[in-house]
Image (cartoon, rainbow, N blue to C red; front, side, top):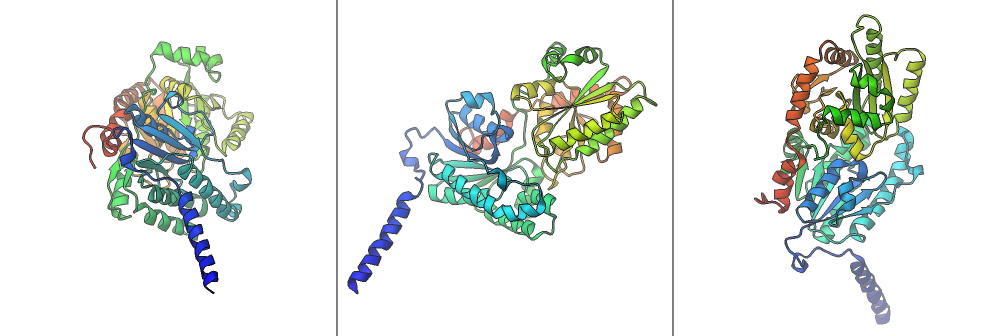
Length: 459
């Protein structure tokens, strides 16, 4: 009997010892060789190359001498300064297998558990064993599931302080696919609310989002609004630089004479081709614009709409454009879809005549970063404005103009592109003024102080 209990005692303690030995290493500030160098993990359960705010966080930490590990999917090119920085290292997460991806609501419900398990294991391995323990971890939210749970566990084990960087609410995005009253949406909302309370601090992209975290989600930790601001590569172009860029861009090279003479106006939009942007609205407005330009409003210029980005609904949009062109409904309008490098995208915004945002906020309190980039390039913006945070960035009639319907967008296009373009010039001047406050100004005064890498630590 004694031998029996001794055997099981040895097995039990062996299992416990093995488990403890296999746990990730922990952050110990006493072991830091250079206590002035801050190590930060930055996490996004998405493509790093298409997550500009995540990249800007990394560049800002590195600029102040910190060490950065970026954890996320590596599907597209990242900012060139990240590739060249000796202070930043990228740790790619294994991509979710294709058979676990779907646009179908019903198949999604069946696949979701398997997808979550795969993501949990991938994140645990990347955060716990492929990276050194850090003092801080900044995680983008959403995606919420399983990111918040995994990062909380890792931060607890590794003695790391967690900061949630709120871009939106995960449950509100899920509700666009499943509906507000779906049980999974309700569970997601409780999951997001409860787990977020354990974070050390929170950054938000708008003031309104910060108020919701404090009041509706009862978060007592510091909640710091940190608005998106344009990075240094986004800036207005001179007329000479503009025409040179358009003469080299494949989508505009053959149209350079019409652009130079002002007979063709270039409009630009950026998208991930997801359900929170309704491009059928743009198609309807532009086809109506073309009809007016060939009949009642012959003074209207031809327009070229360049839409950048990758995503699941791009092919559907291209088919709709082809159908409209075949029906003769786009005589005075052209559409081009493109995927550009960071440098070319910045130049496109600086060279275009008008930016368009079709972002329909799922929560009502987020803001699309594409609008920030447009303003940084001195590009006036017209956008869907039926959500409460639009005025935090755009003042209608000053640096942009809002709309809430197809006819509203059509009216704005006719008003700005017709006649003498004085209103368009006014909006451009306002955009240039708004774009003067840059990412470094915002980051240093909020995140930099909180992390202790800038003077005047606010913790």
